[in-house]
View 1 (cartoon, rainbow, N blue to C red):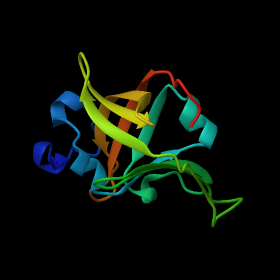
View 2: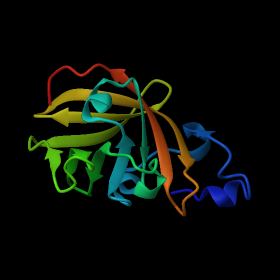
View 3: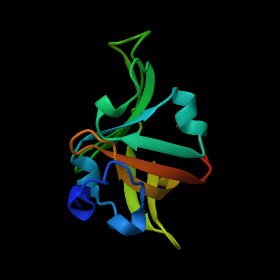
View 4: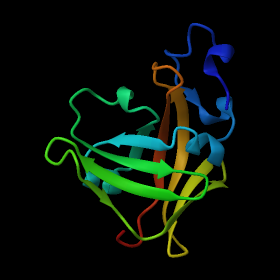
Amino acid sequence: MINLTNLLPGLAGLVLLPLSSLGQLTRAGLAAPGVWYAPGADSAYYQAKTLTFVSDARALPPGLCKYTTWEITARKFAIVSYDACAHPDLASRFLTKKKLRLAKGKNAQLVDIYRGGKLVDSFEVLAISPTGIEDSKRITLKRVMPKVSVY
């Protein structure tokens, strides 16, 4: 993983760099924080054309109640939805096996999500940027393939 402060001392927190400036995402890079947070209700995650994930919950807006996470390990991937205000101890977790794969698109890297061996979502990586909190990162994704089935 590239340390942005080495690339742009003093400016790393102010500049949104395109993916091509940083290199490619890796499975290990995604699994390193383990959890990626996307603010918004469950339905926003499944309907939004553009999603932003952060690797540190402290980078989420204060008082945020609803958010969806990608929980990534070396071998497992889960999409989990939370409503921390209404049900702080509950999470909506889909038990169907899912796989996350990184792929090369025509002009960008893709993050593909498979369920039952079928591609159900595909996202183009638009940018990776720092959040301003320690080593926390922000990843901006654009949905390039509509969901073909319900999770």
